[in-house]
View 1 (tube, rainbow, N blue to C red):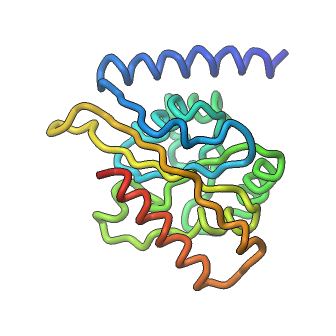
View 2: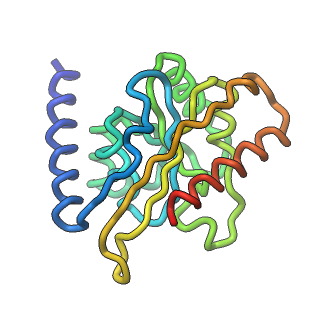
Length: 198
């Protein structure tokens, strides 16, 4: 019963957020045909504001679980969204083994997860090193990576556009622990995201 109630809540909340994006931000979704309808996926995009996670959740046409830093749960609304969409809380600045195991389990079951390589909002602009989490999950699970670029939603450009790129397949590196491999994959993914966000 609890699961059924949560599904209804998710459906209502998702619909409301989608309408909100359409009305207030004129949201445009591009490249949705690039998102596979089945199979494990890792969604990742550029991170500019609190709008980015819900925008991806309501436009991708796939259920996904976001890896979200624990601090966000201090905000009641964000905590509610985290509950409704089964976000995976992550302890910041440390290797959160439980979050990693949960994410890999979901991918093994053919589900989708989502995270931001920048690690924090506007990480690139702040000069922070891009995190290799997406690459790690890709090589450990063999799941395809769906990059997406988000632009707009600012005073200068109110209209939001989200563009989904073609899935990136790194299954040939499955099981690799080579840091150079992870770094190269991370760089390629980030370059794709930047291109899609133009």
